Length: 402
Image (cartoon, rainbow, N blue to C red):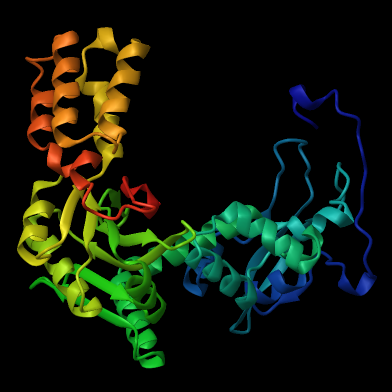
């Protein structure tokens, strides 16, 4: 009898079609549960040992494999009972009900049943390659569908791909650094122009990594007068800071000169990177654009002798919204005057200082410490103090690293 809340459902009687030779019957015997499961597709759950089966049999229990669907109250089932005759153990079909009260899965949906889904080595290799390219499970699923020619050819769902991707990342978690170093070593064997250096601390933990290939070296010697060095990108898993050296070519396109990973933003970490950068490139850049990190500034002054040092204007202007008084946030006239003052490279240093002081007095900003600090360090950020440098397509911000 159906539950009360399902009594309104129209009764359907469905008997799966199969040959009589493949249809189970009461009393049919099997040597083991595995043979029985192979003969009739059942959901085994936790597999029992023969010792557990004998214990259950001695207590009068039978071993049942039934799948009662709560949604429609389907009673189709099969159960096995352990027996032992003349010292030979086995399993006998005790009960078999083949009538279902619902239709079977349609042919076009059968590939998505759990029994028909399996990730092959081809699937796993494709998922691994996509993970290396930072492609997520959803896009991987779509790409795989297009490659194989349709959903019915895939043999998996997006959930299977997501789980496989998770397992790959969990496996690589303990070996990620070694995998990176092995890849660096392989690239070095393929090309003598490839350069890499790394530093490991006593706990066998990666402290810093620097790498550069032949194309990057060539780009640097052609377009490396101005270098943007950015340390604002942190990796999620290993808590290391990604530090690319980037620039622009003669078409204004962004090019990469080198890259590194460091575990902290102290002077020693940056000094280690700059040291290997100069050893790799031989020649120091004429100008380097960075953020306002004092540790970075100390490393630059120590190692990049003769290199002009400039702050990223974007970081400074971004902080302007936080530092300036709220009454000026909506003052368009102030914004226009301030931008014209700090961005223009047409002023002489004396003219800039006069315009700056006029703005500070007009809007009463004499007691705002941030403006006073920016004025003291004006030679690191204001274009007028770089008039003796051939600007061309000058990098004023480190956003080219993105």
